Every structure is written in structure tokens, then in C-alpha cells.
Amino acid sequence: MSTRSFETAGEIAGTHDWVSPIAKENLGDRAYLALRAALMGGQLKPGEKLRLRPMSKRFGISATPMREAFLRLVSLDALALDARGTAMVPELTRDQLIEIRNIRVDLEGRAAAAAATLASAEDIAALEAMHAALSRAFEAGDYAQAIDLNTQFHLHLCRMGEMPILLEIVENLWVRCGPLLSHLYDGGNPFSDTHPHLTVLEGLRRRDQAMTRGAICHDIEHGGQGLLHRAKGAQADQDI
Image (cartoon, rainbow, N blue to C red; front, side):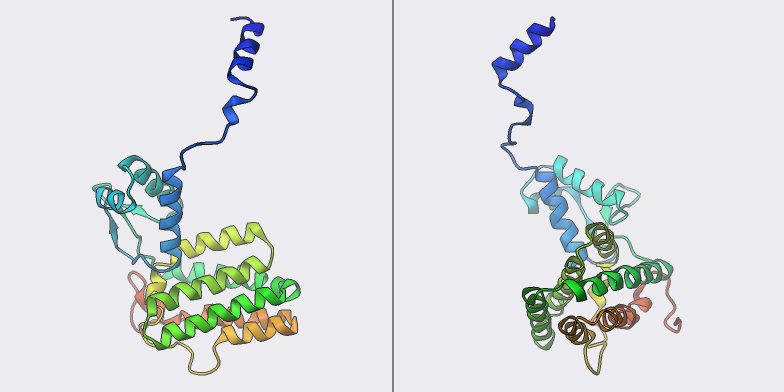
């Protein structure tokens, strides 16, 4: 086929016809994003199995896009496959949880310090509203909602730091540790005095980088201390 024939075919089909808008939304992407959000928000539990056909039915999609969503999350170690190929939520070991926590302390601390210099009044108000809703959910015994709002608080603070590569890394860490955070309030409120979120908010108002960073690091290190005993293979009497 001559060059002119290709050009003619292109003219008939329309210039750059291959970049025309996709009429049908990618169903695999929708399922992937929904599962990812559920993992980050602690709505899926460690060890929980996600069977292909029931999950496809719940999402209202066929098995193929559902399988694609599972495999994308498997590639991030956010899901695993058992011996029969069934997708399941992995159980983090104690060492994995400590490593993720330490990385979060570093990265979320950096983002919080940056946010202290960049935060707008609207940003701070949004965080205040999240923490207020978290407190109401906790007092009402709606721990699932409180855990989801805690996730939102941390990730919104990271977004305020305006470091998109850091945010992407942090989100992937939350995808890994989110299921274990479903046990965050099993022992009640981990903070008997002032909640670190309130100190974060005060640091943002003062534009105090050290205060903001220190408060979110304290939240990560001490708020989830009880989760170490929930990790796979952990001994109840171990501590760090």
C-alpha cells in the first residue's frame, strides 16, 4: 500500500481518528480505584478473600475487568493470590508494618512540614471538618467511618504539601497497611490526652513546620502502636 493510500485512508477516517474520545468507561479502572480506596480506608480486612464471580456481580461488571483490577493490585502487593488463584488481602508481618510505619513517618512528616508553609485557610478548614467528623464517628461507635476519616485526614495533609511523587508513594503505603488499620480502635482511643490531629491543625495555623511535622509523626508512631500485636506472627508481649 502506497504512502498516498495511507494518507487517503487517514483522510477518510478523519485526522488522528485513533485519539477520539473513548465512549465506554474503563470498567477495570473503576473496579481498581474502588478496591484501592477500600484498602486504604480499612474497609477490607487482612486475610479477606475476594472471589472473582461474587465481586464481579457486586460491581456489575464481567469477570475480565474484575480480574484485571485484582492483578493490578497484586502487582503492588496490595492483594495476593492463594494456591487456587483467589485474590485475598495479605496479612502484614510485624517487620513489614514497622518498615511501612517508619517510611510513613519520614514521608508524611516531610509533607506536613511543607504543608505548614503552603496551607490555605480552606485547606485547614477542610482538615478541621474531617477531624470533627472523625471524633463524632468515634463517639457514636462508628469505628469504620472514623478509620476512613483518619485516612482522609492523613492523605489530605499530604496533598497540601504539594509533592505529587511523595503523595503517590504514601498512597501506595496506605494501600498496603490500610487493612490492618481496620483494628485501629480495637483498644479504644489510642490518645488519652490531646489528639495529635489537633496539634497538626495548630501547627498549620501558626505555620510552624516543626510542630506540624512532630504532631503527625507522633500520630503515626504512637496511634498505631497497638497494631503491632495484630500483625502476622506478632507476639503479644513484643514491643519496640
